[in-house]
Length: 110
Image (cartoon, rainbow, N blue to C red; front, top):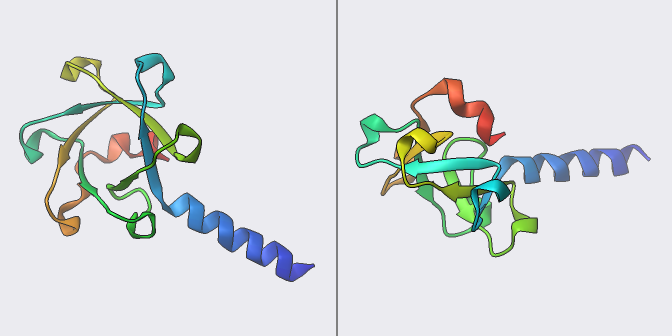
């Protein structure tokens, strides 16, 4: 019985670690509204797009885009103006550059 509980806990921990995102069509469907900025210095979060879900790491800006909303940890919508966004993001070219620049908004992606 303990083994089942332990295995379940490990499985839940693994799923919670991945930042799987899905882009929705309407702002009302989103958990978080995003705006892409031109420079990393303007961002709350620098995001790196990973190729495999196993490479997505916790809440550290390494995201994997899923095909279906039901697979996502967070549903996101890209807004037209920074003032409409919950989080301003900047896409980086290297995983090592993915990071939160504003710790105050980190809770939005948990």
